Length: 123
Image (tube, rainbow, N blue to C red; front, top):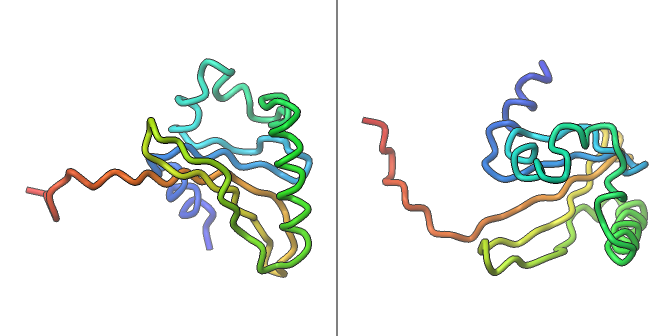
């Protein structure tokens, strides 16, 4: 399948998506992430280590999650943070290849606000 489909899904997400490899290098940021992290460098963060954006405690937690992801192909999602101000939960999600091997991870933001858009409001 054409990878443009997958990129389109990520790029259309209204939540920031930062994808990292196992060396913690940022390999992709969707437009929302570029905008959200603009003060920290925005698109210039691509190719840089995510570990430089966090403190030692956070880096340790990231390493613990990666080790857990590696233990079992069923270990794929960890709840990492609650942001009351934005009414969202944050997770680390494992990225695996077709063989189930861990190849990277990303942070998933799930907003808990009730949708204000009307159903099928397309007219």
